[in-house]
Image (cartoon, rainbow, N blue to C red; front, side, top):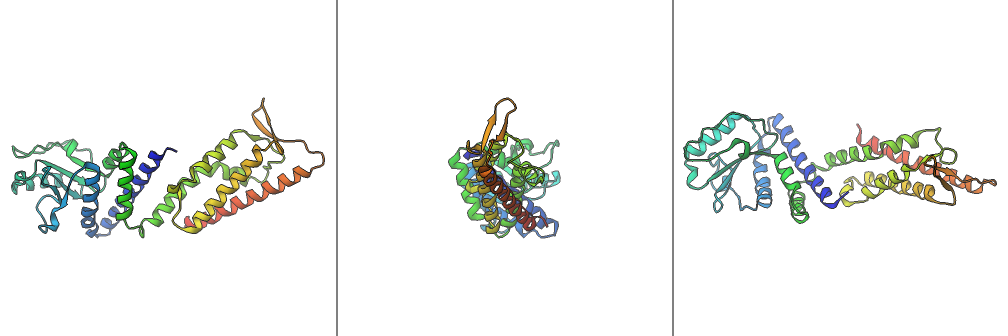
Amino acid sequence: MFYKNQLAEEVTKYLSIIQAYVHMQNCKGLFDINKYCEDVFCGLLNIVCDLNLINLNRIDYNFPAVDLGDYNRRICFQVTSTNDISKIRYTVDKFIEKELNKDFDNLFIFILGNKKNYTADINTGENLVFDISKNVMDISDLAIAINDFKDDKINAVLGYLKSTVMLNFTDDYRDKELFNSFNNAIRNCIKLLRDSEYDFAFTPTPENLISEFQAIINEWCFPDKKFSMQILEDNKNIIINSMNEINSYLKSPIYFQYHPVDGFIMPKKDPERKLFNEMQNTTFNLRKIIIEAHNQMCELLIQ
């Protein structure tokens, strides 16, 4: 996987966690998280949009209509978890009523969730130019924009999120998400290794199994694929290292040979069975190690 894609994927995970957490808190009637998000997205939008936003509520408690503002660039944002059209109309009306156009030309509404497909027009009069298709943003819009940045800027965004979003509520969520991704990657391999009738020493092995194993090994050695819980990381490494050992056996001309017609890897003939027994015992033990490590990961995360 490309480095930029890994960075962008990690940013998306953080944003998804924030979005899910805000939704969960709001469903429980807890709205303080929305206030915390004003500061989080103030800093994030500054990086993403090259702005110098400040939290206006820290200057004037319950600042009318908007929450964040850059007076030099004359841009302001309201940060809200409400995506109803009535909320957008209310914000625009309040912006005009309080004559905020004296300080700001551009009003954006940032939704801590998913915006709707708005079709209604917003009456802004002559005091504000507001295009509902462009001036209403959500977390998905932010993720898409960040995905187009260069590596260094995505890295800056990721660094900010890591330093701002407390991992005490993201670790469990991230580990579960990471495990789902890991499980999807190794699903076919685990299915094969669990098959009691399959034996590398007897059964022809498809050639693409080597490349499949290698792709998994390469991808899951990157730092962004590291589990927060050490026991999960240890078991993941056990699985990856064992798969690497199996690959070494399959690629070894001492034990196996490639059948060019059928595209299979076949065990080499071994009349004295010395190499055969060694290879059979080793691959059997490696399969057992992988399955046990995978079972332990499942027990920890699938509850």
